[in-house]
Length: 109
Image 1 (cartoon, rainbow, N blue to C red):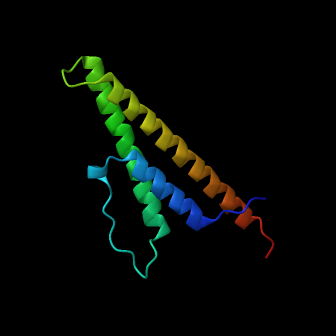
Image 2: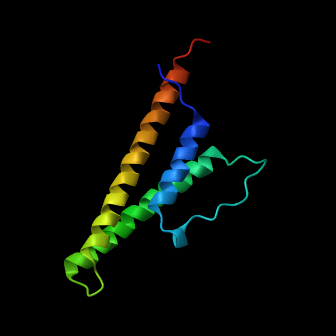
Image 3: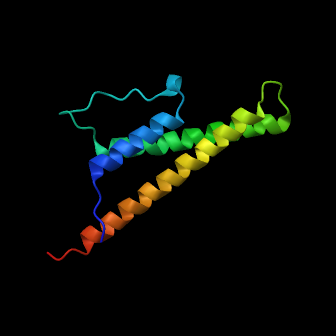
């Protein structure tokens, strides 16, 4: 069985989210209560960031396919790759959380 360091996992999620989002669209979180961010709110924010990345990549791809004048293949491909990477990261986080839940539920009491 593997153990999960939740703080390390959250730190990695924040770093990946900051790398995926452009600086002007960075999330402005409410100040944490008691110095700690609520895990569920961080998870919800990460999921919504993945959704936004997917929507933006889809919008850029559709714009490029239509032949819009401002559409750039390079930026479109980067947006699609970022969206793909953020989705894969979120799937891995989900898998780790499910594994941790299963480990906890299988612990003898």
